[in-house]
Image 1 (cartoon, rainbow, N blue to C red):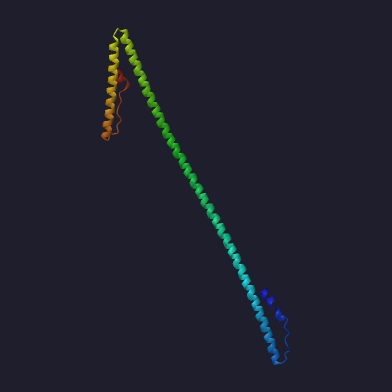
Image 2: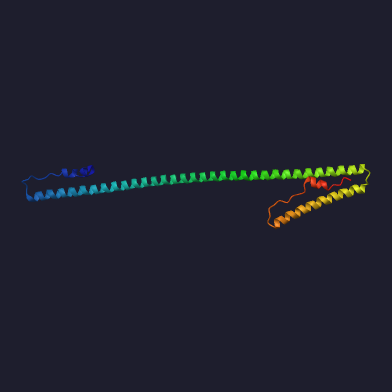
Length: 195
């Protein structure tokens, strides 16, 4: 209301005629008051429009600021969620890699053990054959007999291995999961002829 009062100051400057003045003089005073009042109302309308424009501009600025804050918050939340998802994915990948490495390590160890056992068996078999050949030669048997004995032992071992492979293939064809029993070291050595 203060700006409106300021616009009405022009009304205060109007000097009214004396009460005993002519009617026309009072009409003139009234017209001057009406004109001053209309001028004050126009000024107030301009001031009100300016205030409304400033208020709308301020509201628009606050709205833009609120939208920017909301957008920043959404971006931060999205980035945080993505970071958490990446962290979970990395942890899962590390766990899977560890499990795969563990399985691969166990398989490698089992394969190394199998190869070592197979090599030891071969070395033991060769040692037994060498001792057998030495004993045969010491007993005066001919080289042909020694070679024949070695060939017979190798043939029996090959036959036993072929039988085990055939049994394993038969189990697979029949849908059985039983492992084929390979000839034991003692069984293979039983086929060796010392004499």
